[in-house]
Length: 437
Ligand code: UD1
Ligand code: UDP
Image (spheres, rainbow, N blue to C red):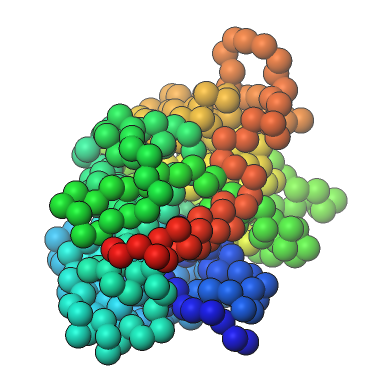
């Protein structure tokens, strides 16, 4: 292959949802390189911070989603926020000064996100290093002082600063040069903070206050969900181990549940209320399937919280999306799963007091129950009794048709967000190839 030039991007990931998001963009990179043998070659350097490390929190996603092996695994592991983020900072900085990427891509809102964002904003490439190390880099960025920082899944807000994720989002968005939003709401959230109000067609990294670009590309998680659902549906036997089929081999109704957010696990009163509700639902004969995040498993054990149904280890992605598709409802505090419920038209009961994914609530497919035992029970029983069946809107209190015009009203794009992101980044390179950064 005779590529014209090389654009080097560094993908920084570390937690479960980031493997899922990055796999879509990685696939788009691979497709681009394959289809354009004489164009710009995108070299992706994958850095795994090691924030998640258990087999079923990390390795399984690289296998399920054909994500390339990380070029670097920083092995940071678990610790307090300061210790964990601090160790990431030192190690990511070292890798950036080894690789000199043109762009650094960070995803979502974890400690791995904020660490990547801080380093990409603070490193300083000096001329001699650039000449020595970055001979093949694109004309767009080879005079840049630092890598361009790209935030994928930018602009999400819960407006609850007690959430560690909200702090990570606000800081990462503020620092980013290119912000790919998954929804119009996210674009509006950024505008309210003065991010992306100006029309910019290039990034000037040498400016005192570099301008930034905000673009709604759609949601990369939707890309992954659409792509892998087809694959998962060809392997229905992956559900056999969950004991979901009756004697006639029909799928029994079940509620799929996950709990891992700090607000629900660190506060054992909330955790007890949630488990109490799920125990009650299970006692009514409705199967509850709970693949448990190690954080929650630990806290349930330490506090002797009684669970009256079977608990599973975390599932792989293919298992998970099949379960999401077939569940009568999903009860979760996960951000990603609220959206996946919507993608698959499965009613969602959110175990939080607010959500960043407000479209899912507005559309009537998601409802906030917080950690309120009574509400969780009420909503779980109502969907088990048939609300949301035949894909009717489960939670709309009043209003028009009970059937949503789902396809024409998809808030999360068309399943090609990652292609759009890659195309956008390449276009930006062309714009700027004659300009000095
Ligand atoms: C992190 C993210 C959260 C995201 C979640 C996805 C931050 C601040 N939070 O939360 O936004 O929703 O990932 O799942 O970045 N543990 C293990 N094995 C592992 C990973 C974690 O046992 O492989 C346990 C450890 O006890 C650890 C605890 O889980 O202390 C929490 O892990 P951590 O990565 O700090 O935060 P999450 O709760 O996973
Ligand atoms: N997920 C999974 N197995 C599990 C739990 C979640 O594959 O046991 C997937 C889920 O389908 C979604 C993503 O992990 O794609 C969500 O990650 P998580 O809930 O950990 O983080 P959040 O989205 O809340 O940041």
